[in-house]
Structure formats: structure tokens, C-alpha cells
Image (cartoon, rainbow, N blue to C red):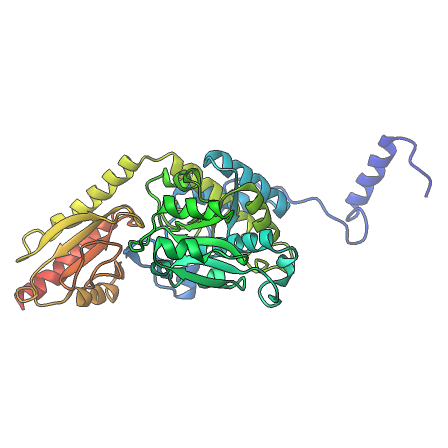
Length: 420
């Protein structure tokens, strides 16, 4: 084919091909024009027969965590309309978040558990050349010890063990000082643990004296808002937060914050890179944008404003059950994790003849189904003064108007039991 002599010749030729069906066989046709607002999506919960609930429990994973506020949902929808390069999005989202959260670097992970794996992988890679492709099966000769307080072992530390590490447990400061060896790659701290002899500052100081990075799992530990930078400023080299809890982002998103070199290594062990422990920990473009939008939304709030709102919600529920024989209501705030007002309803089961667990079961099986805090009728949750005579209502995930429904249902169930 002869070369086109002018740009006009080329565009004239192109317009002709479009008119007869495309630039070439299988070519891209012009997209049809669209106008108007995005249509409302079909309700697939109804279509699939999935039961919607009222969440008077909290940001628990098994209850699909938080409900995203409107600006976050809008950002997710907007992100779904356009493809982008995933690595560029992750990098620029991380740079934006690091500036907002006053740390060296940040990464959006597939939840806090994913951040635990990626952060551990980063520390392994820092200590072991070639570890990225070897973890967790080719561990011969590799440094892989992680020091942790015995009181800080928990059900989520499997996320660290995914990297092939071995835990070294300590209890006293003397234990801690002696635990460091040539194989130590990291120390791990569970931020919400209410036990253990060694505090945060001492934990950091000793680890850094040995040239070892410290990781802090603070997954559920906002509010207060300032915790998003308190622990990195304290000296922790890596900190993780869940995106779908207090920050109110997508459930499958989280934050890994900390030292730039470690965040870069975490990214190398993350999706979309192949042959890494993080390959399956994909965060879609919509969730990355949703996480950034959630941080923006969260930073626009105030601790005092959120607490006042939750207290008002608790008071409205308590007003419904006022007058139930022997019932006393109070508000309690857990000191670290889920640091928000919870409504406690305590009564004498000799007078109101139903246990708090039976109340929870009755509300769960009602219409609409209501989930109370899973520690209802049990001794203690994150230092909340609950027991076998106490209903625990987590008010902070209730949507507008749901407090009235919860209050009325509690009154119905408890009044009936008091009359039995």
C-alpha cells in the first residue's frame, strides 16, 4: 500500500473503513454513545436468596465487616468504569496514603491478614537474598525466626507462618534480650493484647538495638484516628490496619504502613508478581481506590463526633428497654481494639427469664434478622465488662433507623420473658 501523502488522506481512509464496519477485521468499533445516570444495580442478595441482616454486633469479618459510606461507594463505582495499570495504581495510591498518614511508605493489601503475610515476607527478603522465590518451602539455611511474646500469640499468626517462619516465644525482658540470634528476621507485636510484660516502646528499643525490624498488628485499632500514624511515629517499622473495620473501606482491603525499603519488598512479594507468597492476594482496582477514598473519608471525621453519634444511638436503644424489671443499661468503650461505645444491658435472669444468648438467638432468627455482639452472654471482650447476664449491642455499624428496630425487638423479647 502506498504511503498516505497527508494526514487528511489517512483520516479519510479511516472514516471509510469505520463506515463499512471497522478499521480492520476484528478491529475496534466506536463505542455507542451513553447518556444519563448509571442505572441502579440489580439486588443480587434478593436474587440469590441471601438474607440481609441488621448488624448490631460490630465490624466482624463473618458479618462482612463495615458498610462503606456513600462517598466511598461512589469512588468504587467510578473506579470500576476504567481499566488502569495495576502497578501504577498501587504505587500512586501508596504515595498518596503515605503522605496522608505521615509515614515513609504505604501499600494497600487484601485485608490486614494479607498485610501480615506481605510484611513478614518483606522482612524475610531483607534478611535472605532470594527468599522471595523460595518462601515457604525451600527454607534450608534461611534466616526465619520471629520473636513474639507468648501472650501475643493469636489465631491470626498463621498469616506470618505462611512465609515459613518459626516463632520464638518470650515472656520477660530478659527472655527477649536473649532471644535474638543470627536467624532473627523480625519481632512481632499484637497491638490489642492486654497481657504481656513488655510494652511497645521497650519492644521497639530492644529490637532496634539488634538491628531487627518490628511489626505491629493494629488491625482493629481505629478509632482514634491518630492511631493511623501513632505507631509508625513511635518507631514500629511496619504497621497494619484492616480497611473494612473502623476506616469503613472495602472488606477485602487493608493498609500496610512503614519503612520505605520494607514496603518496597512487600510490593515485590505481592500480586501481580508471580512466584511469590502474595500472588493470590489480589486487590482489585475498585478496592484500592475504595481504600484510598475510605482514608479520605475517615480523616474528615473527628473522634469526638463519632463517639457522640454512637452514644446517641446507644441511648435511643436503651430508651426502648427502660422499665424492663431489673435491667440496667450502661455504655462501655474497649481500651484498644474496637475503641467505640458499646451498649451493655444487664439484668437478673431470675426476674427476666431468658438468657442473653437466648435473646441473641431469638433476634437472629427474627424478621429482620438482627445480629448482636458475639460476646453477648459471655465473660469479657477486649476488656468490656460483659458477662452471662449482659447483652452487648455494638451500635457503630447500625444504619439510619435501625436503632429503632433493634430497640423495639429487644423490648418485645425482654418484656415477654419478664411476663413469663
